[in-house]
Image (cartoon, rainbow, N blue to C red; front, side, top):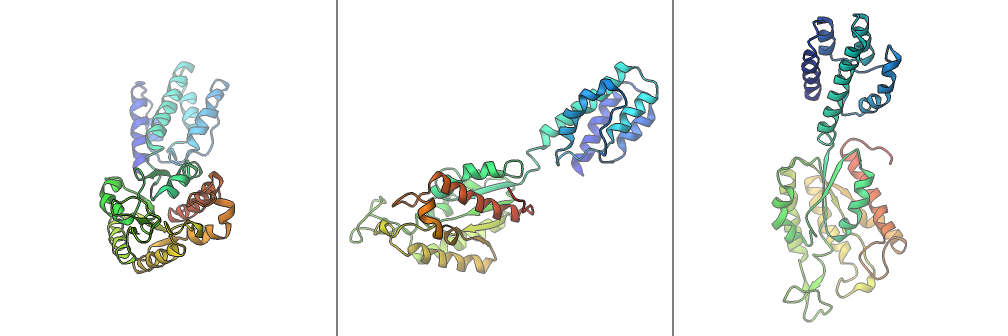
Amino acid sequence: MAKSSRLVAILSTSVAKTRSSDDHLHKLLSIPLRVQKLVAPCSCMRGMMEPLKTILSKPVIKPLITFENFCKSIYQKGMKMKKIMIMASVVLAALVLCAQADDKAVLPEILIIGDSISIGYTPPLTKILAGKAVVSHNQGNAAHSGNGLAKLEQWLGKKAWAVIHFNHGLHDLKLIDKSGKNSNSKETGHIQISLEQYEKNMEAIVLRLKKSGAKLIFATTTPYPETLGPFREAGLAEQYNKVALKVMAKHKVAVNDLYAFALPRLQELQLPNNVHFKPEGSKVLAEEVARHILIAIGSPDKF
């Protein structure tokens, strides 16, 4: 409704500048009616119809006047053709400016928090949701849950997020040495974030994310080949997911179970002996993420 009021003000002011004394026109511009037809009363205006129709078809515009009636009104009042074209151009220009100003602003803002897996599927996700939502990924790699908790305020910023799709796990369960570097030795290495600490971190992360007012979606940690051990020991993803799901159930956070989704197709989607996915695999993950996000924003359309 606010956008409609702004559009009325823009159009009314512009028309007033033409010094028209036609009160009927001003009344017409102040009546909030949706556009029903785009038929000009004279052939010289037909060239304007297609670009105007394209603009008016945007869901963010929903203009307030019937352009047909607008044209007919000034035409029937006996105005000269030059003034008709000026008036019609004013309306078109105002709608263009309104479209440019509001087009992005009304789209829901989506924040993706995650590691290199989400970094891989964010580009195709952005394409899938183009025109439906604005997708952003946290700066860099979210890494483990301890890092996420420390940088959460920075990532959230002051933006009003509609949906936050988040994950930590692959970096929590891996082995590192005393210096923090990746390790393949159980003797000299240790799991970066223990299950107990992981649960505490995820609890704190969820509590903070809930304060944002965004709809939350937790993505389970994706599976990886058993051959990656001991750097990433087989079966740990399931254990960390179990702990995370316990936290999500407690706080009634929606879950996108990418682990269960990817597991049956792992050989097809994932790079050999790697946690990362093929380009096609990342695209498939993006489609599943998009499906959950569209449901969250109330637009479960097919894409």
